[in-house]
Amino acid sequence: MTVHSLNEHIHVSSVMWKTVSEACNLACDYCYYSTCAGRAGKAKQIDKRTLAKFIKEYMEMSHGLVNFVWQGGEPLLAGIDFFETVIYYQKKYSTKYKRAKNSVQTNGILINQRWADFFAEHNFFVGVSLDGPKEINDQRRVTRSGQPSFNLVIRGLNYLRSAGVEFNILTVIHETNVRHGKALMAFYLEEGFSHVQFIPCMDFKAQHLEQPGVFAITAKEYGEFLCEVFDYWYNDGYPTLSIRFFDNLLTAYLNYTPEHCVQQEACPRTIVFEQNGNAYPCDFYMDEHYLLGNITENSFREIASHANMEKFLLEKPSLPAQCQNCEFLTLCHGGCPRNRLSSDNEAGVEYFCESYQQIYRYAEQRMQALANRIKHDKLLALIHAGYPLPLKAGPCTCGSGKAFTSCCESLLSS
Ligand code: SF4
Ligand code: SF4
Image (cartoon, rainbow, N blue to C red; front, side, top):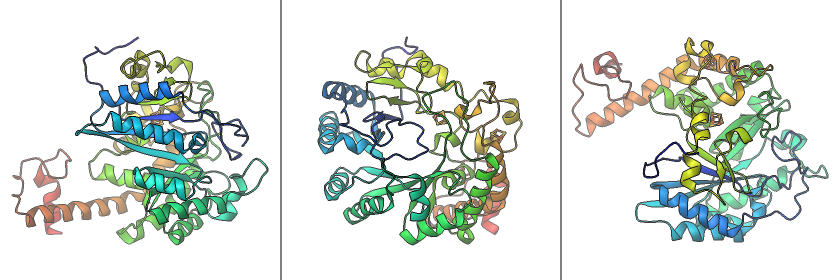
């Protein structure tokens, strides 16, 4: 069932494919998705005809940069020939005004020179999972026979570095590393990583929407972890390492829209495809109640405009009373709606509410100081470039919606 007319423009911000479904060559003990325990077998590729239909319809409906995310399981198990086919169809449907941008999330152990050259040639952004230094990572991220993965991942990262591929590090935060924020930060800096993101370790299968969103760490533990890491990230007001949570928080202080869905006012219109073509609105809503259709039978437009998508998009803004009255609402927007389920399945406050309140309060003064310095520098740059200052009662250059005189004007005298 669609709720938009066939001619109406619908913007889909990105599409993610579970490229090889649950197939994976690692057996991390906390995996929220794969049940294959590292026995990947022969991973099935997405059927070529389905792939061609999907890319054609998605590209035809999009403008500018068209975002493709390839996830798993372990997506590199699909093989380079699969991704070469992807590139072939993306180029076929590119125009002067639209082109594809690919990201892949991998455990990194299959990356060799050939993969690195391929990613560099086609400008892929590569997310690599690594839970910290060897002694931490190897406790949880292991092969099916229990062999450690750290050295294999670092080998893959070295191929990426030497080929000049852009990558970030994804660290799952669990019982083994949540009290080691300082050690994690020292490790990232020593390795020279530029971009890092954290994901709290889930204690439920993402596919089972009836299960409440509970995690391997408590909200208090995650809050303390974020505060500890923040001290190192802040670096006396001159951060050198991008940490997604803090970058997004700073973005909100600067009156821009954060890029991370959890920190946005509403969930973006994205589509997640299972390897069989079934479509859902989010990785955490892969459930029959949110099924948007199947790309082998439905058009991409029908999927993007399905009534279940609209139902999903209404979830995040339906805030519990505690959020509506929260002093941090403009920074937090209630977190992720998937995590709002309490144990009796009643919609409640986000599982990590306490963590968020803790870090927002802890970081407040320093974040404000950092944001003010950036706004001040931006204002000076405008003045030096010859732009006139806004009128006193006119809207401020920082996008706050306030009058210039009651907003950034005071920064000029500081
Ligand atoms: S900090 Fe908690 S109460 Fe405040 S908006 Fe976020 S989840 Fe809601
Ligand atoms: S449900 Fe959560 S993870 Fe999914 S898009 Fe919304 S905020 Fe993001």
